[in-house]
Length: 218
Image (tube, rainbow, N blue to C red):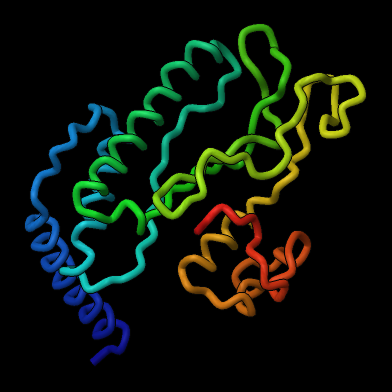
């Protein structure tokens, strides 16, 4: 038999079997008492919470999920857009952890937000333009909350060492690699393996130091 055809058939059959196991496990999760907002971000996090709740039936001890919320490129109407969208994020995260608390897994889950770019400090008239340094949110029962990690920038432009232009392009003080490295260690990755996963990590952190990259996880 053709090796490619045989392999393709075996993988397809395995995928269908795994789908059946997944559907059965999700169907067995009792409905959450938490009411989720009618928005795709909340719906996505609701499904993530269901899959996490089904971890025993799925026979997995570590899971990683990616959820996207597009539309943050606010060159126009930045105040109105952010007022609405930040409210969506706040509600969705609150509902997500409320559901996880129902199943006793809130301390086993860490949520992290990140974007590939941020916004200028100054306005272009009705919005803001592409920039560099921005904010990230880390939440979860294992997180040392109510803290700011990194250096929060002053918002003045002239003479500000963290601002590179008159438009207010902020230089990041904390690399995204540090957040990812901290969560990788929390997942059980050995410090000696961090450089294999994050090739640039030694520019910001010494994996053999015995201290966490940022220290935001218990």
